[in-house]
Picture 1 (cartoon, rainbow, N blue to C red):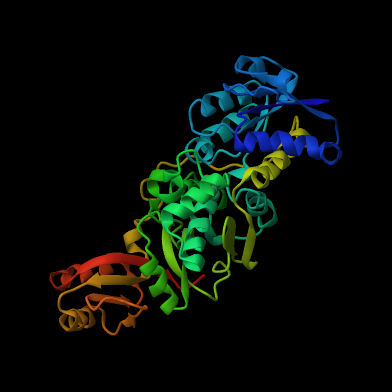
Picture 2 (picture 1 turned 60 degrees about the vertical axis):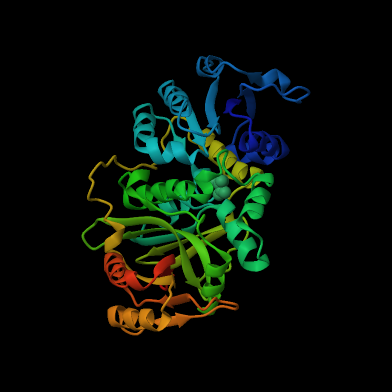
Length: 415
Ligand code: HSE
């Protein structure tokens, strides 16, 4: 009998317990042994819970109990999750977590601690919720050099953008719905400002390219400035707006890593990924493009991935799963996003549209002029050709006396 503990009984933690008891028979069959949840750590009271006797408010009840061999960390945040996980690993317990922030900021350190103590630290649920992506990336695609990963990595923002695109629902109303459905982070600014997707980009990049990428090296822009006008201009280009997390390997072994809203063509495999669904496109040198798709947030989809990691931890007691990367603090490893070549949708407000149009033509050459229903006469929207982003900024500043940039969104035509 392998005893398990769950730290955190929020949306995901309660989902882990629910999935475990619902599917216990098949879970045990797959693990090859009997399993039981012995302890649940949470500071809150859960009166009337069928698991009342398992609850504890004291972490030591889990740490000091050597019958507990596998611990689930679903508390969220870095502290005290980091200290708890590290102590569990040092005590010889394997840990499964869905905590993106923890893995993105402390992953290299915790993987090292796990290796030193011959236990496992698994985190499939930290990227893409219920979608299997980390295991495929590190195992099934292991023969490939990964060239690029592009993903819709945040369910909350994808839900909001879908509502804006398909139903013209306001940003605020759509966010409220996503929170009610249990998709959003405790602090939803992490969703809408892009921090959650950034953490997932860090994990994907670290795993794909073998060096830890920290969140502060990833240029991150959220969706709070996206308007229904931008959505309409995107439609004029047969595009939709999606929050895209992207990592690319460069020829000199450095990488790009970014999170930002982007126009993507209706023809893209990512364009039809709607609502809370996530998708991750992986481009490998042998396989070409492969896309992983499924529910990226929510109680049971996320619990599904956590419990699968628990099964893997149980199956590998005494042995190691080789998931790891090295720590890296080289400030030049992730290149400055301003050097990336992109096209840009730009919307400007102007008192003199003919003069602005002429100046834009002088700077950018021929641009694609965009239109939308009921556009005011003082708006001029266009799409530039592809060039380094710093060059786009220079050209826009050269025309700034003739108008003000009200929107600027990158156009990704290669996914
Ligand atoms: N808040 C996250 C999302 C949860 O919306 O995708 C899953 O990581």
